Image (cartoon, rainbow, N blue to C red; front, side):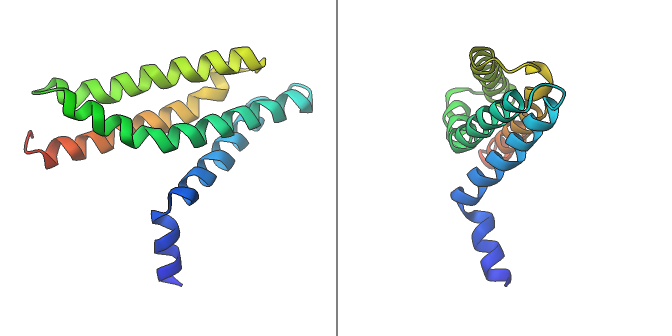
Length: 130
């Protein structure tokens, strides 16, 4: 049982699926006061965006982390990831007609930015910069 759980925890497919369902579900909840079609569309859009961002965030932070030196290496990669994620989420939700864009992206953006900051900090420390 533990081995299966450990495998799932390390699986990219599991991470992507979790991001899709968790953040897509959040988007449905954030838009529940609107017609069901709009809430479900917001959920599908956010789920898909979260799945894609989950796949690329780790790689982006690793690349950005190697581009900066000194104290900038600590704060710039998560900030850039946050700004890029914000722009992508806001633009695509606006284009898809999501009613409550701010409510919809607040949780996913907080989670992804927190992950980027924590992961970047671990890279910063591992690189002997701390």
